[in-house]
Image (cartoon, rainbow, N blue to C red; front, top):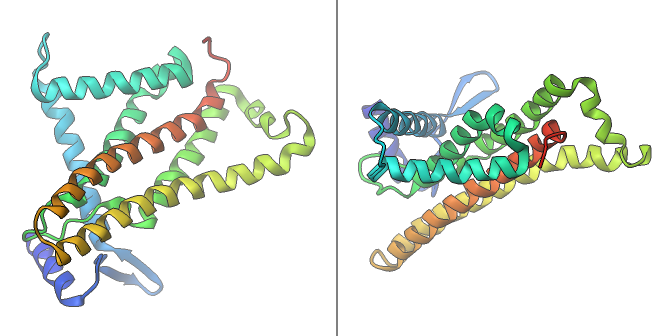
Length: 240
């Protein structure tokens, strides 16, 4: 993978493309963006290593990385309790925490220095963002049916049957807007960073990197909040 990554970094420079996806046709009509695949695997590996390191030898009085991770988990626990209730939090905690961490790392990995490897965020690829938003939409229905049966779909005709059109429109547009919001913000940040490095390689890009790291966190937070909103219907009977 190291040789392929180096080759892709060189290819990105030679191609003149701002964002190099390394699109590869694996079968007639089937194209995979290999750059996105590599960066996705790296992001998943980083998330796994973070959780492994923190959980390997936890301390009663946390410090360093353990302290940061516990702050993030406590923050997410509060959001889940507020939106899903206690039962919903226990049911969805592992997935929501992993989702947030994956999106956060995916958003930030594109800010790494372009030395030897063409670092890009997996979330600068619309395919990744659509995959994440469709995962949320479909799994929300699965969780809802698992907990409530087919009664889960009664909200489509509430408060009156005539509202079914609006609810169906919302069901279609919500994953679309979630994906486009995440994709647009991350892609725009990386493109502007590359342009700034070309125009002024000192100082200004560094400030933009810090701002982009903040934006990456905000976008991970927004996506997670919207995901919790999708799952809230499945736990609408929880006690506040």
